[in-house]
Length: 223
Image (tube, rainbow, N blue to C red; front, side, top):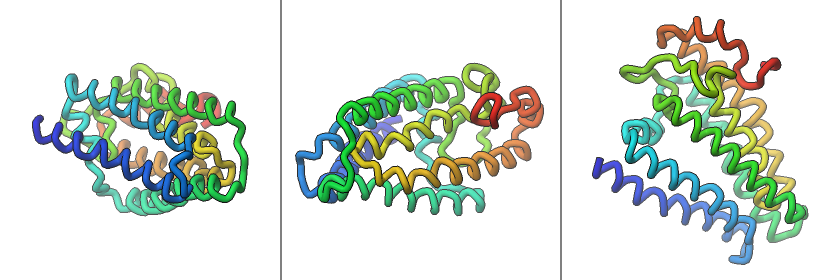
């Protein structure tokens, strides 16, 4: 427990400083207020969630902090996703510096609210399913979750992540940065879901029956 806390207390401020530094360096200015607001919007709920699970389920946080993927197909998807994501967070700062696009203040603020709403859905998923690890694998004692948001769709966490990705560029004041996030949402996440289901059907007892009961993966009545 102490080791986990120490790791979190080191990584959390480092992640904040790293992300803020990327935005300020690419923007060439500390006045890039959209990026400062975005960092607060992202890290404030993360701090709340980490504090919540440190008290109630530190094992969940340990699972979420595992980054080494075992599935070969997932490794390929993650590499492409990370590349697109990295390009996506570089563009807004340069957009701010050179004035490539102008996102209205009201749209920036609405985008931040949507990101918060997406993260709130992710938090509800975490509360319902403490086996929601970052990597695709089956953990000891894991069982099929069919309550809460899982009673509606099979992958509610991604339903929260998708609006976060799509509105992240707008929250950062850039229309151009939306472009690299489109494949992340509409291609990479879909591929990840399909491969994840193959693993769960193969290794998690009861998941095949759950798929028959809850028909839709991501969008009710659509897919």
